[in-house]
Length: 597
Image 1: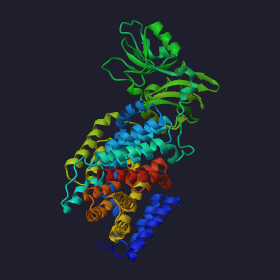
Image 2: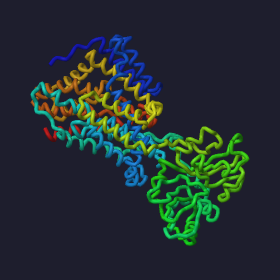
Image 3: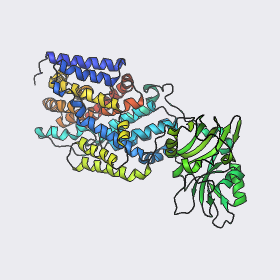
Image 4: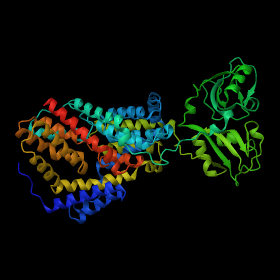
């Protein structure tokens, strides 16, 4: 097989690639700006036709990413992902390494049966929320989990695009096809090695947290010692005392924030102060352990940790916040009872701070003044509805997303529809996934504005700008020349060197062309060379397809591009963590190939 001749167009293409990599590593320009510059330079240099300049924006990969991000946001918007990861949180116990390990394994397993970008996008909102709640820098979490998603794509034959098309590439050579789990031993070795790498070297290869990256959520209750305990209370079914919500507040300093009158009735969050608490009712309240014990002794309440009303008090749905009465508030000169605060705003006032004094009881009778600080409990949706009126200026940032659990069934149905279309319809991946994303808008899971806000447009333009560069590498013959030249230098290599070089070349081409482009170019070349050297051509093709997932050193892989913005990563961060991991990947892949050859 003769090497293709080196041409001026190849030199130009290699020049563009070199400039792009240098600009990525220098951090002088944003990576998406660099990608757009590369995209626009190609038609000026005559490397691609002008009409194909923006083909990346309409590519199957980019549209699929947009659709998966929207569906992931929809699933998170309904609280489904939060409920899914809650058991993982309990198992991890808030420790960083354990959280990263459990999430990495979970995402890797899921990505072994679906496109890894899908698994990565679905878990992104949950990881971001978890980072805030556990006060763990997100830059310490996203990269290991994203790399695990890429590695998970090596475990089955449907985990990544190169493996999916591997049998088609082998068909002209009359070689036996691979089955679904033929690659599993190698994939498990690579996946396990990658996850172990981060467990051992996480502190050295991951970027240090930036100032202000983790904004630890300060619990306002810390400053209100008489409200430091949340308990669920059951009023005895045979009780005869007529109780109102305000009685518990004014007499016992127990502030009821939720009430379910009967087992079959809904939960009132919050109940009005004048509302009666019937026998057998379940309510949730803030107070102190001493006051709860006094209440139980006097009135027979059963006091326990939240159980039946626990869902209403999930930090994803509700919480406590402080607000200052503004100088132009409509509340000035009025009492909370007069403005019917609980009824009108669906928020329960717990305390009022005025000057050096904090008032816990008699709140409904106090005339509000400018500068009064109210401590309130309610659903985040209620806080969000109140904020635009500016009657109360909130002290802390209310950056909680309002969840809509009632739309959970619609979100799951849309995601299931998209998944079924991917598996059974034969339609392009982008069409199937965008159908599910549009379904979430049409069913009211998301508004169109929320869908637009959910997309990381830096990711979109980064990938859209690099796709034409990959096309130029193939069209000018630069990729084929590079592959054949490097393999030609090896002469008659031993088995281990041949497999290592195949993996290395596939890795390099994956970073600048695409994993699919690397497989299409290299599999035929690898089969021919392996046959000529008396080696197993199927194994050589498998090494190429697996090494096409070894794309950790630059943010050119879809998962890396997706996580780059939210994680606050630079291209140099990927090089620092990705270079040693890529080397470990190649060593493990070579050892596997030699062992089974």
